[in-house]
Length: 227
Image (cartoon, rainbow, N blue to C red; front, side, top):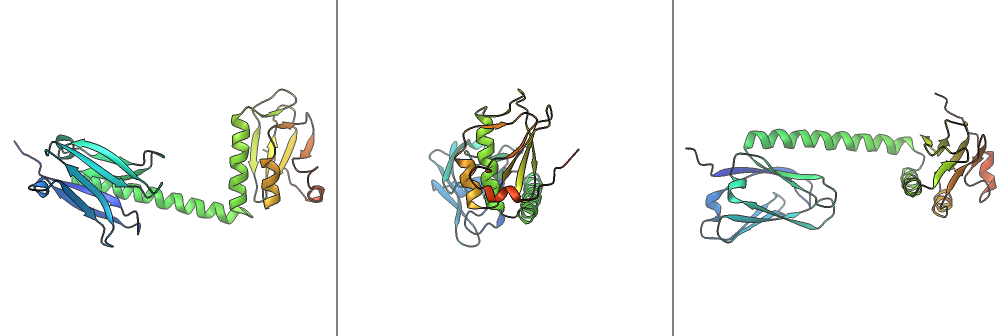
């Protein structure tokens, strides 16, 4: 019978962001109840506490919500030869892995590639929009309105399509072909949609959400995207 005495931790530092690997041994808890795992920058990445070496409490500093998450593992789980996941309890984002060395390294590298791809995608989106911060805020506000069931067309259709452009959103009813434009470039654009509780597209019509609040924008040229 082989008894596993070591397990590998792969975790990103909440301070410097570096991904490191750390070997955790059963024998590290001999004569002590607390073990700290530190990054090469000196920051504590993980704090492990035990009273009887049967159950272990892990304090995980979170790089996402900037708090500490508490996870409990039995000794059997930590040294079982299977991977244990550490994640942000608020967002579900994976923060690290504890388990067999080879499997942990594969998971950590795959997660790293996923995060880099996501960062690249966000960078490209930021370059696409005229004002990415305003655009994201406007999209969030539109999502909130839709969740309340307050986004619809007068013709009765509630399945409104949204086309995204660098400076605006175009809401389109595929049933009657009506269009409503929401600009997303300035603080004024954001203020307008934040004051709106309901967006009702005019049947067979074309209008701008801010046409009454800011008539200067009605002169903007808008190109409709056809499928």
